[in-house]
Amino acid sequence: MVKLVYGFIIGGVVVLVFSLVTASQFERTSTVKFCSSCHEMTVFNDTWSEGPHGLVHQGAIRAKCTDCHLPHTGVLRYIGAKIYYGINDYLAHVTGKKATTKHWLEHWEGKKPYVHKAYVSGCKKCHKEIIGNGVPIKAILAHKAYLIGETKKNCVSCHHMVGHGDVLSVLREKTGSKM
Image (cartoon, rainbow, N blue to C red):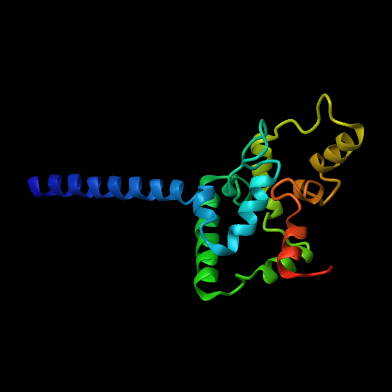
C-alpha cells in the first residue's frame, strides 16, 4: 500500500513538473523575440515593429505574433494551432523550404496573408467595440455588414496594413521586384 502511495506522489510530481515546463515553454515561444529569431522572420519583425501594433507607436496596443497568427477561440484550438504552425515553421527553417523572401513576396502578392480569417478572434480580443462613437459612418456600415454576416471580408481584408505596415513594399524592395 505504501508503494502505491509513493507511486501516486512521484507520478503527481512528474506530471506537475512536466506541466510547468510545458507551460513555460509555451510562454517563451510566444514572444516576439522567439518568433523573430529565424532569419526568415526578420522582415516581418522589422515591419511589425514599425507598424501600428509594434514597438514604435506610443499608445497603441502592442501585439505579439501569437495575438494575430493564432486562434483565440479556445485553449485546445490555440495549442493545436501553435504546435502545428510551430512544427511547420521549424521544418521550413531547417529545410529551407518556403524560407525565402521571394516565397513571402509571392505569398503576399497572392493575397494569402498568414492571418487566417478564423483568427480574427485575436483582433476581437482587444477591439471589442467596432461600432461606436467617433467611428466614421462608412466604417460603421462595413462593420455592421461584417457583424451580421453580409460579407465574407474579415478584419484583415480592410485593415491589411495594421500588423506589418506596408510589408509588401518592403518584400518587393528586398527582392528587387518592380511589381
